[in-house]
Length: 325
Image 1 (tube, rainbow, N blue to C red):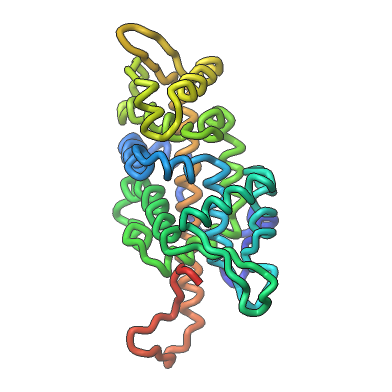
Image 2 (image 1 turned 60 degrees about the vertical axis):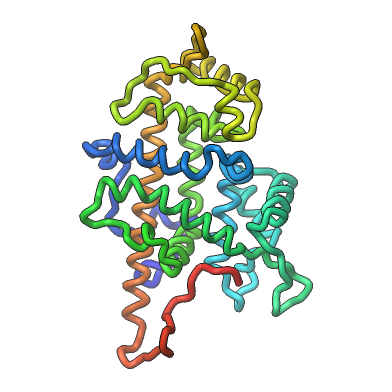
């Protein structure tokens, strides 16, 4: 909600939005290399050496599904059935963004349920309808996900800062995810506009392998050959060395890396890969900055609608947190 107007995926391009940092501003920032390094380390700290979690969540289709469910939960209005996060609505949204087939959505949702990230319960208003509800485990992971994605912005713009996100404020998490629910197509477009990275982002463990390559590049953007054990890389994310080899061979065929063998296996990220990653990260950061500013605008708009004489019970809150229903 901005100035009382809902920004939908259809009309958002024509609506005025708060000032925010563009991808070009971010790429030109002198601290961008440090921000990239911090982002890479942050994501690897969550997923590397955790094969179960990385295979469960860290792949483009699974990431879209995970975030999509959280967003639908955030804007769930019990009085409006069209907003209820049912399997049907989750499937329609995920398929509409080209993230997965209906069968795969069903399988991934069942996997999230069996691993304790999601629950399915009957709607109080209609026991025939089943509502998908994030558990505290899913919400906590979403907070870590947000922190890792706002960390590079925090590094570039510490004076302004992103305190509610960095402090994992539940109420602001709710607002951020509500805003994203109406801008969800933007994230899908960022992925669609990054075909260079799709051999990594669309494959099991591909995102981790890409991040490990960017970690070797470092803040100075060095594209020299670096030794990489396929076996160790695969073991850290729960895939075989053959899977890693095939992924990197495909990347080499696309001119993104150079593979050589000596005493060990060496991988050299090419400049085209580094530039594509930097552009992808900058676009993502610009999107997160936009969403943050929209969420701040929503809070200001909501605050003006609260009567000065309104009171809350002791310990009460004017906002509900993003929590399991």
